[in-house]
Length: 198
Image (cartoon, rainbow, N blue to C red):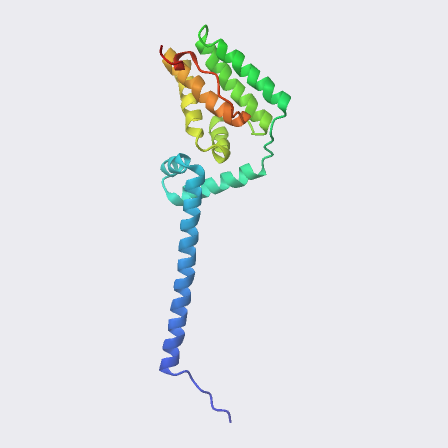
């Protein structure tokens, strides 16, 4: 008859210690993985990270939203423009900007439309504004706030509460995103009120 050796008290303590250490190691791995992911998302999205956290009421929800954006935009087919297309868009912007002094209200609307047209040509879906801004926050996180600011001025202008300086600011903000989407690295033309004082 075989004798069954039951674990001793010391063996139970050793096993419990191993289980505790393993559980702590798993917890530490999840903790540092999550912290690393939070840091990565914050670096990638910048102020959009904080804005999303404030809007959704917490880090977990915000990070889930931002990861979903990454997956969504990762499936989009964002393309570079050909040289002739880029030249056409650049020329359209120059013509638009030249008309600002004579008709700032129309130019702001045309700037908004030209940015949308450029986004569409590059492959961004043209859903509502919040979706468009979420999509561009992936590749252009530093400019998503200027895009939102420009859109807010367009909305104020529709209500008749935007002055010429606000309209100029909207065009400058649209131009920043436009240049980024176009891939412009050359010195841009200066808006009338940005010209240095003599």
